[in-house]
Length: 118
Image (cartoon, rainbow, N blue to C red):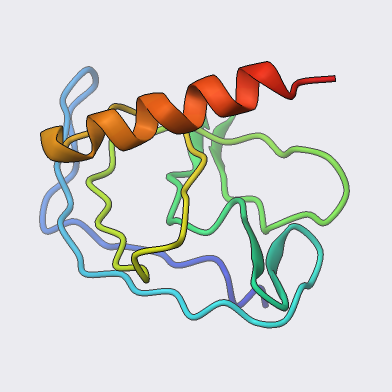
């Protein structure tokens, strides 16, 4: 019914308080701007692009599809993300920079942004 919801069947039930790790390659090709993701020319906006686990609470599972307006009931997870971009692209994102030799460039961009903040 919703193409953005996937159901995974575990080989055994998961005990209360237990955890499971899932590993899967996941690639995204951005469309022209639609809702909260995509691109217009060389400006890209990428939100809610990654697989997110459904919430499980006292009432059971809550698999909610992507909503264009507002947020939805969802859990968070830890992701390892690799971006491959042209040299002149700048990424604004949450997280921690993992490439130490890019730190001077990042600091320079931060200072430039702070000086022109309105």
